[in-house]
Length: 269
Ligand SMILES: NC(=O)c1ccc[n+]([C@@H]2O[C@H](COP(=O)([O-])OP(=O)(O)OC[C@H]3O[C@@H](n4cnc5c(N)ncnc54)[C@H](OP(=O)(O)O)[C@@H]3O)[C@@H](O)[C@H]2O)c1
Image (cartoon, rainbow, N blue to C red):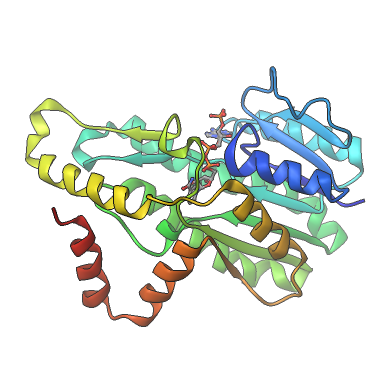
């Protein structure tokens, strides 16, 4: 049976995907920062491993453990991530670095951790979780969108470099999904002396309220990930959720001004 290694499998999309692949008969290396108490633990063919994408030693340990246990890693799902939102001025450099270290550098480090064995076998699939926010942006999202635009670009570039070696790259772009993303994974920054940005924060709230009124379940994304892994070669990007399909079609078909004015209309009071 093939094996998938998933980052951020403690909740949301990562956990739903662990359950989906396990149900399909795959071996799953479900990695997370704090494995204690994970209810995935008792399922057959699931190995729980500690992996913090910002801790290189934990990446090496989890890849080694998973490979020793199941023989090889066929698919890597780079899912771990969170959203830093707020005016740029409200973020310390450390907090900015944490966003990029987690969503971008961590993803690159985990990818580097599995590539040698995939390259040696001339086989493997890397699935990177981007977002609709990897192709379009919302106000006060300079950091989160910066990371997801980076994920889009680095994934597209990597696909040229890895395809000749038999390794496929897939980008999955979820719309609004009902997970912990808007709660514990939402790092909102604001300061009392930055009230100049107050109206934009309110506009962001209205926009999110409108766009997130009917979020999809994580199963919608795990289903798309399943299809992306099993699709015949060729397709790079996969959208997840009806809102992703609609917004990304608009982004593609409208000129810049028309699209951006449409976003501003959704922000209006
Ligand atoms: N929900 C949405 O609307 C949406 C839309 C588009 C894209 N996405 C993307 O989907 C991915 C998963 O998010 P989700 O919606 O499933 O939210 P979630 O339920 O909050 O899951 C986020 C996961 O990332 C993990 N994580 C955060 N920092 C980490 C680190 N340094 N090392 C390892 N794991 C770390 C969290 O682990 P802990 O349990 O340890 O915190 C958690 O497992 C993210 O990349 C997000 O950007 C989400």
